[in-house]
Length: 102
Image 1 (cartoon, rainbow, N blue to C red):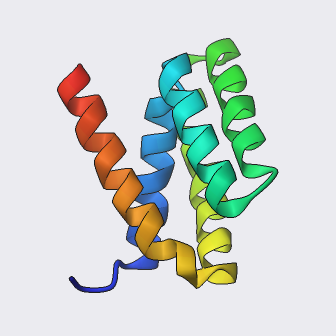
Image 2 (tube, helix red, strand yellow):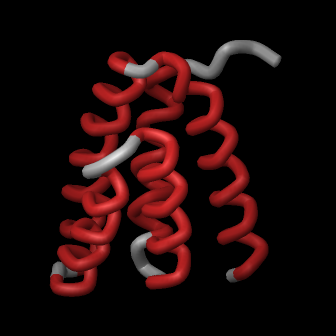
Image 3 (cartoon, rainbow, N blue to C red):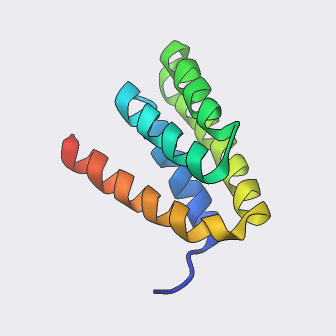
């Protein structure tokens, strides 16, 4: 399997996290996964994102959160290249599972 493109993983991951944050169970699942892989504070950041989205205003709030996550995930993967492939895999898995649950 080819090495995932870091920027693609960051954007896909950002959109997936924002989508997961629409549902408390999905947000908690992703928060637990990323916290176990990357350590604090990433799990807490997912839950804070959920809180902002719940209080936010539709597309604009989601777009802002996706932009924040794209930067955070990009920085994380540059600091921890060992997380690129696991993150790409969990993003694909989560997106597929959320799509089939809808």
